[in-house]
Image 1 (cartoon, rainbow, N blue to C red):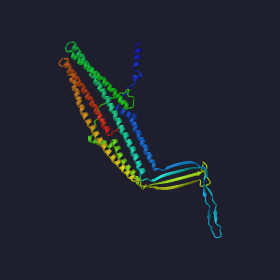
Image 2: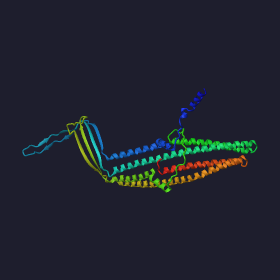
Image 3: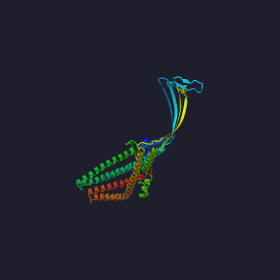
Image 4: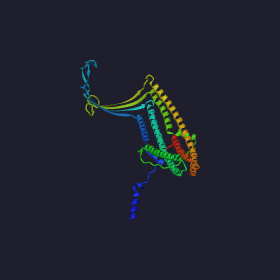
Length: 449
């Protein structure tokens, strides 16, 4: 009977839910999940696809346009041409003159059916088609680079939220430790008060400190929930969905210098390259505007078939089919300086793009320098904060022992505990800021996640 009860207990404990391992999300997994599901990145990819289709549409303008047309016309009656009498002089001596009597000549039947095949092929457009296609190519490349920039931002936001969860969980542990330490201190203070060793005021201070520590613990737990909700939102999940992340150490410290970081950022950052493409678009815009100075040459062909029946087999008046081939030239000679103004507008657009490129390069350089210096400062603060934690732990231990011997007061114990909590808080925040600064630096440099 005991064996049966033990077996049932084991089966209850090892249920499918208990057997299933709790999935812990790593930083790399979180980044990859966001890159697949994040709505802003999906929108950026769709924008790139739209720009690519626009480029393909511009490419089609190199080729002929072929059209088919079928129409039916019904006149109120057959169309005629009235002929006046004409007298033709004798063609030879002794011959009588020829007189053509007046009458009507049919020129069109009452029902007319017609279909045509036509094409038009541009031969020369003053490089307008080439410039427009080149601009579309550059726009597509810009959209692709903007999608890459969005990808970098999404990955960075994941890392920021991920580090935020780790930091919030560590702050929760600090708050739990503070509650535990202050609870133990209150237990000692109660014993001293009951023995008449300390006044009631000291006991009240310990009670108030413990109550505040418990409130801090509640806030710390809420911070963990908010941090998890933030990461869930970035991953496009329900904000209340269960989420656990894996603990991680400090990110590797980059080995490059600040100068090298700025150079790499200006070389490979997508937003900088997109600004350069904007300058190239400005040049092509000038080329497109100047196409108005040149003649446009085209080739056009038309094949036509008509008749007074739907099958267009003729009408006994004219040939049932005909075709023509036309080489044409169109040149706008005067339009009150319109083309000149268009060229000047395009030239100003190029200057604007150059100014925007310089602005982007300056902003990127400043952002990289700021992130680099923040990383270095956080790295130094970690060592300082780690030493401070050890000192604060020792200070609290000594103060607590001295309190038990009634050398120090309750106030000094509470102050020591506050210093320990602050030291631990600064230490974990230094770790968070270092990891975040490294992630931000790599993001600003255009490093792929």
